[in-house]
Image (cartoon, each protein chain N blue to C red):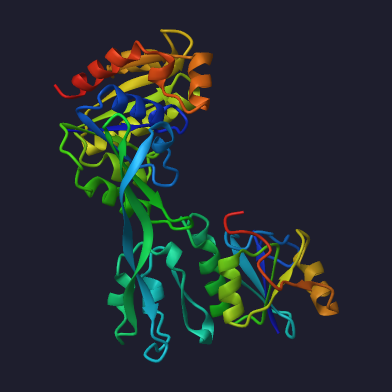
Length: 119
Length: 279
């Protein structure tokens, strides 16, 4: 299973960035092999609008099976749900810890957008 | 003769000045409320609505039977209004659309057609004083304010008057540009604070780029010689009116009154101010 984590860092010890649309990049973890890759998202940092929509497409295109982030607005949620990518909520803690929590099934899956756009 | 009343900073008194200028020049001016995200001139003018018309813009719709998920439309959109949701196909977020039509042109399969949706209203009204007010109102959640502003400016006058006053939206973004574009003169309203001065500089820079002449009105001053006045004198920018900080003006405004109600002697000053904008 491939997981995407929103982050400003570059490794498993980096903290989760709780922002989804305007995070610097996504860390993508292949759970089976333990392989880690980075997906840049920085073009969205200065997007005038629709950053969440663009981020959602980025992780969908990367072919991930699930996303772990802090919050998700209504438009990004709509795109991810249409593409069948489940969203799990995490706190601003090391990605390593979140990956273990995901494995244990203790992360909560988001059933609807938890913040308004532009929060 | 079009005269825009604008300001880099919000809350400096654009509407207050615009409404008072209209009332002081009722027989020779009309007013366009181009602050379409929050129009409020009508609150100070007892108006009777003459006509309401819709502003419509084209937005895309995707025919899923023709779409081959190539993503060209999504890449063509500069506003993130289209999204490729994997195999679920292209999603349209029409509230983000700027109606450029790029997506429909980018599609080689004819899968995108455009349809009209409402983005705002233009309300034309007569004031008690006989003056005319045209108000633009953007539909909540839409991002296409400039289209509504342009529709307000295009609205034909109920009666032809020599002066058209334009109450501009705050800031110096595209809404400001859409409002002041085509004006013969701009009155820049600001206040004597560091924020007021900073945003005045931005507005002046924008107007210089657009080659529109302007003069400055400083509102809520406590001293005749203040930081904005000093800056303008040093740079050679003209300050044509200074309005004092006055509790009575604020109280009158809070009750829906205008500058003229609070300071009747402003009447003559605002007639002269308009004359000065039209040499």
